[in-house]
Length: 272
Image (cartoon, rainbow, N blue to C red; front, side, top):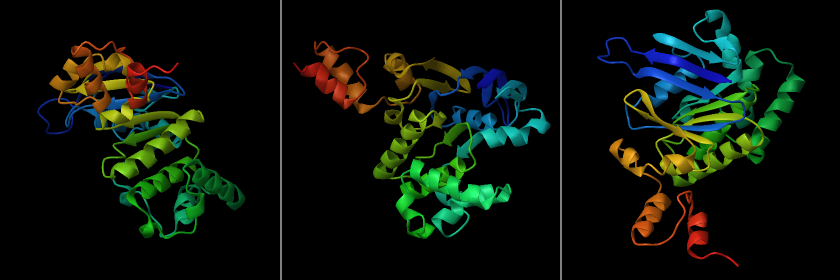
């Protein structure tokens, strides 16, 4: 569905490229986490997926369409929905259901179809009961879910989250992550750029960026075998992984694929 072929990108007046010869493929239905320290290129990579940025060298192909062809951009952006850091910057009306309807209304979609889309989108993010609420009364996590509902109302095939949890408190991040996992379980392709490593353990793959390059691209189980590389890249593994490795160093027999607190508890105290 998404393919980066030897992509290099350099911002104007920058001393070095933000992306360097990146090759990456994302299949339909996958849940990919993209992580990296500040300046690693992860957000730059995300902005290439819907053509907000175009490679200096190489090509990005989305749903069979190259992003460097301006004739493809409208269709690409109809297939790629993006949510950014600050939910307040993505909400344009004062009432929840009106905000979700804003995108379809601007596309001239029939009002009856818009009503169906709004109801389905609010249900998908668990915000049906808030349809008539004033947007400014919502928490940060709720606002981000409404922003995602507005994206879903446009019926995209891919949801890209560019550090969408960065400005949320812990409870807001949990709400957002639960919503995103439900959407993935329903069949949506998800690309999640995040600085919180604990958010990545339930993904299909983790792409670790460093200095504009792909350092690691593998399952969470494999990526978190390389805690030394992560720490060298200023990335702190999830607390459960740190505890797992500490216990292993003390002689406990714990499998390397243990990533969550539940898995760690089962490894230490197996149920009969």
